[in-house]
Length: 524
Ligand SMILES: *[C@@H]1O[C@H](CO)[C@@H](O)[C@H](O)[C@H]1NC(C)=O
Ligand SMILES: *[C@@H]1O[C@H](CO)[C@@H](O)[C@H](O)[C@H]1NC(C)=O
Ligand SMILES: *[C@@H]1O[C@H](CO)[C@@H](O)[C@H](O)[C@H]1NC(C)=O
Ligand SMILES: *[C@@H]1O[C@H](CO)[C@@H](O)[C@H](O)[C@H]1NC(C)=O
Ligand SMILES: *[C@@H]1O[C@H](CO)[C@@H](O)[C@H](O)[C@H]1NC(C)=O
Image 1 (cartoon, helix red, strand yellow):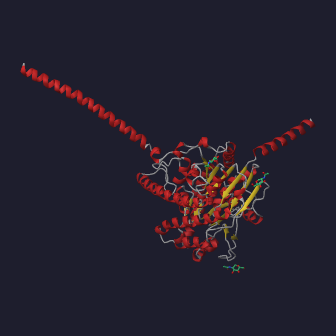
Image 2: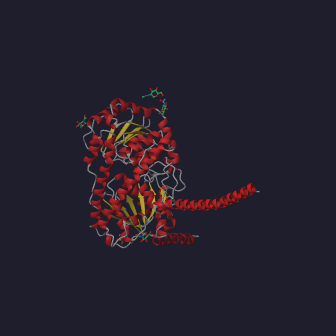
Image 3: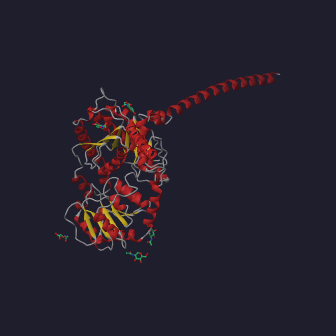
């Protein structure tokens, strides 16, 4: 009995060691982003491979706090978006025109930061390493980093933290379907009205033009660092992407047809089981059984402490009067006030806080990560969008009935108070987001396991060429079938001509005969 048990144990240990060493692959995580909310998602993806015993190297320009024998960190000098840029954009926006003009300015800023990061990467020893079995790349206005997989000739999987765009759809041949799928740039929701479809078509045309300009700029930068005599072109690299792991899920609103190489991992950064909270937070949250807790954070880029003092004062005055305890992410020591129900802290484990059942309301800027976490944990939101995609995210939350929105630039004590009370007091927001949370979590496989499975799939099969849509390699003329339609029209034309010629000759003969006959008849 004893021997057989120990035999089983030895076997189990041996099997697990064999499984590990047999499958351990060399993986590179290429996450040069300056956006912390993007990095959080990218790191969740790569952590699944570290946990499975793969030998993982990660390149970032932001700090990471991971210690693991399988994990190596190449930390590049930090190149962040300057805080002054955000402050100017957020505090001085006048209207729609300013909002539109922010887009190229933001892309320009992101582009030059990414280029500096690539220059820093070239100074490291990375390019002398052995080839990797897989490269996981965090795409975000930094496409020229695709030169790294070109250098190693490794399969590449993209982690996409945006909604599908013309640009990313083209990489894997995913259809745009503009007459029922809203453009990734638009806040339009499904189903689209007639004018919604008109607007979407025009927006799509605009996106196609922007994508061309964007790609040619990216290619020019790529060729500076990965010259065409040694490397495949950036366009070839776009076509060589094995999979896109998309940080989005169909339950979030947009139904679209998808190719097999698009894998939905929306919600991956929300933990199914929260980590234990630090002592101070757990005592606040556990203790707030009667009135609950409000969690307030404007995210990592646009700090609360750098917002307009008058607006912050209005917000403070409202929050200080509430029965609820408020946990406020505040970045420096100069608090707007010392109300006994407000607890300030510089850094907060947001996902673990939102998972606590006593949280009643999340006051949020509606960044990508915050929206996902509130949906995953079923917490209603008071949205104060500040910048870029936050407006679209906030609109989505309001349309779904999960949130009330206030305009940051027009925020007054009265309007803010009314909105806070509306979300706290009217249970529809909470009920709807709780119901959605159930739907959002219901997947055939845990989200992390899904990501890990597909990355290991690409490792096992050394790429995923067999999954690739043939559309990737087709020209626009072929893709839209213009050549086929043209060909069929020519055939139709020829048939028509031949038929009409035949008909003509037959008819002519008949007529001639008829004429002769009638002549004869007359003569008779
Ligand atoms: C893991 O990868 C690193 C970086 O490429 C390398 O230095 C190290 O030797 C590898 N470790 C194993 C056990 O293969
Ligand atoms: C809050 O309390 C601190 C320390 O007691 C004090 O320095 C600060 O001025 C107070 N802030 C306000 C707005 O009352
Ligand atoms: C909340 O709603 C109830 C009725 O549903 C009302 O009596 C109460 O005054 C409301 N409270 C606030 C703070 O608006
Ligand atoms: C609660 O909010 C919903 C959605 O905005 C609204 O239809 C409903 O009338 C509100 N209920 C109350 C009691 O105000
Ligand atoms: C394309 O990817 C495959 C692996 O998926 C790799 O073997 C090949 O070298 C890559 N081609 C180029 C041009 O980088």
